[in-house]
Length: 316
Image 1: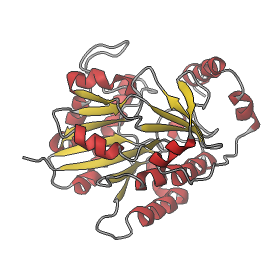
Image 2: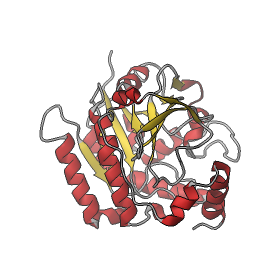
Image 3: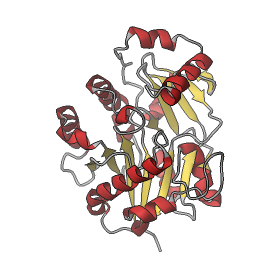
Image 4: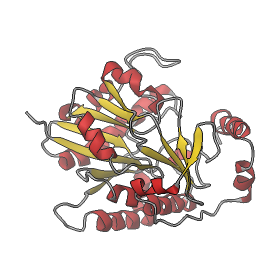
């Protein structure tokens, strides 16, 4: 018997990390421009469009005209009233996964509150189904055209989660592309929830909690970061390793990732961009302050150390 699924491509736009997950309207406009220019074509290029595009925002974005104009444009872009369009939905209760930038007790409470509020909207979106697939769709990274098809195929089996191990990295300014080979599980994964578990905040959190000790995280800790997905689902986590299924986008306004980093492999032909729907997309020009320009010219190890001190130690 075939199980009915509802697939959510989840875009955590604001509310994640330091600065209350918001670095000003100029930052937001840049992220929206990147999303429109690169992520939208990649989503429209998917061979399987049986999914809902879900944006999550802080409560403050309900009254932000930049966000509301963006949402309206996305509804027109993807849905347009057609029966086979991609539905767009927004929630305004914060990030719907554990944010380890906060102390554990605070992070758990934030997550529970976010899920409780979001489900009031999502319960009607998912309707009657057997399982809900929740794919992390970063606001500036993209997927291979066959990613949604591959995800749904794997999760039709006995697996509860799936991810891609390898991908590409692209300089959105120059359109230069290289292989990307991270050593830990990258943030491009999908979780399959039983519907009743997905919509119940307590069950949702328990389902996505660590099942074994890993580093400082004890069993029962909500999934603290993408590196630990395997420690939540153990033998029921699948890896799609025969497809470079994701592309990390760098553009000068990234918080952490730059084109020059230890996981970048060999440069590849730009023809690969056709598989991601952005071959004909022009390079983007992001306004970057003089301080950020100087920072990006520093060696990667120096950049990483400075990020650690500013973000983790100084909290600025």
